[in-house]
Length: 355
Image (cartoon, rainbow, N blue to C red; front, side, top):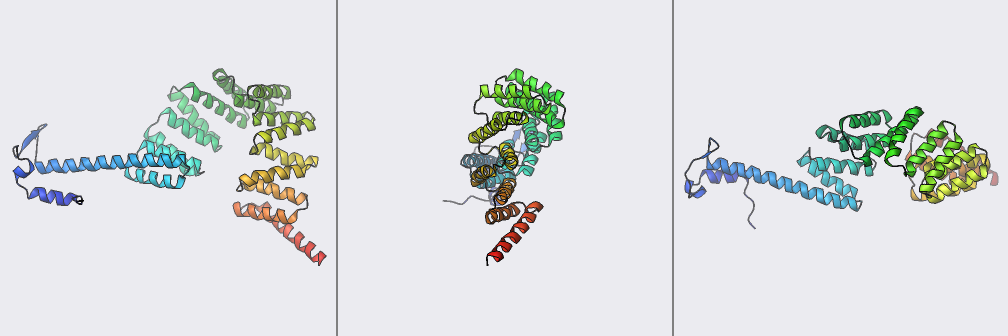
């Protein structure tokens, strides 16, 4: 197969060709929009257009392959292809959007924010603004999220599906800020769009707990369960209500129901650990934590909770291993270092006592 001629070789060959070689049936010069163009200039422009089209085709293929790799969770390979595409075309909206989504999936949120912000600068659509706001929201950067949500609301009309999420999230932000009236206002706006959302009903219940209205909270959580009996968050809400009323057995039943439905509900797990220490059910919490960490072994917070539970049960060797896991995952966890030291000293003392 003949190798592709370089740009300079092509120009050199054209320079030494006769006019008839280049355009045998035309005059040496011709008019083009008022400008006299030479055949050599035509060839140069054609070559540039060919290179541009080739680059666009390459980028398109890289994006297609990257999308396929992402579907199969081959994120590292997909990221390499997206980098190639962005090196070729740094303002390619589709490539930046795909890169942002990939970075969010792999937990590189700092770089994902940069991509989302670049999209807003390049093309300030409601979708790009809301995607950036949602990322800020998930990172609990409430001030930035609220500012971007408000900007999107003031500048764009948007579909109800996205408007519901905006109102719900702004309501959640206002709850965290302690502005319960503003939160209720936004929840009500979301409710007019989607009154059968169990997620929103749980949020209403959480708002009522913050207002110390347990009856209203209970009604909201039960409404959520009417919509979706498998709402693990609603079961956690009911557990909190019953605990506050002093009905410990029912609160435990609600909490365990939540974890049966979703063993990865971290809010439920944290409550389980707290209540188990108070109520003498540490063995139960230990079993739940061990099951959780078997599927997510890099959760330093839960690993440290397990270490403390194992310590309370007198399983010092296992607790020490969990402390090792914690400091490996989170080298700044000072409490884990202290517990590790105490456990190591205890194990040495017990070994010497048995000798």
